[in-house]
Image (cartoon, rainbow, N blue to C red; front, side):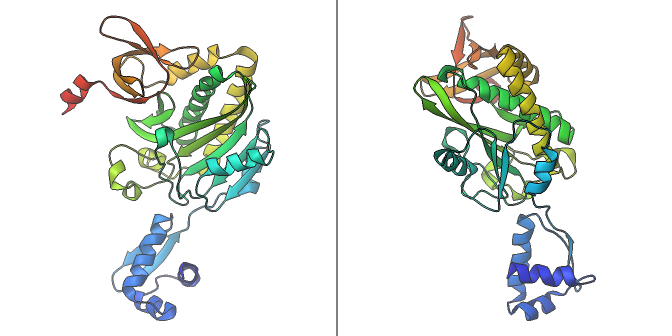
Length: 329
């Protein structure tokens, strides 16, 4: 039905009345209006004028494997690109690819995720045609204890890509959220497959709110998240962002393999929004507060508590310290 509705609007030279659409499609005018709203959620843009009807202004730009491969032709890391119209989770698709014998450099991208996954068991809102939802495989040949270094490397590469593609002052919230003016624009989920005492494969999942409109976000995310489009005031080409990310990632990944974590750590700290702030981290071992002063070689956040002791925190949910929350209220 949506395809027929779009065909009528695309073929028209101007507006199409709701009455005509209702008659041609055999549905009520209210049903036409509801379908228009659903299509707007998918990225279509319409002009609506009383007594004239509807006019299609712009259709969402679909991701193209051919265009992506052209943009990524000079990026040595990328071996193949698979674009899906819809999937529950690109992470799940990538894990199945590992079981089927896929190797490093496979990239899986979806126009939509129906059950997108984030850190700490959370979901990632993934409306169709609005963001970048992708997972890819890498095999860094490192011991398990160094796996968090790759997470920081990924966040540094993504932060630099957002700055380049959208011209925004993006920063990193430990360990790997990309934030703009304090609101989350992207998340990273890394899952590690071990083999004896080495990392066999890592599945890196990246979700970016690229052209998502503020009205599209569910109420529970209001005020907490943003999109690149909302921040820079224009649509950001998703394929250009993907290409910018892999160019940055390939460069940093090669640097990591030749010079280790030290230059990556320096770069991550330069882009960090967390350091120099009093924060609270909720972990399975308890809640810790202190001044965030840096990260360790293992990727842990260093907190200096009230007694002046430095405590490494390896994972958790980061937020402002309790006294800062009280002050803001």
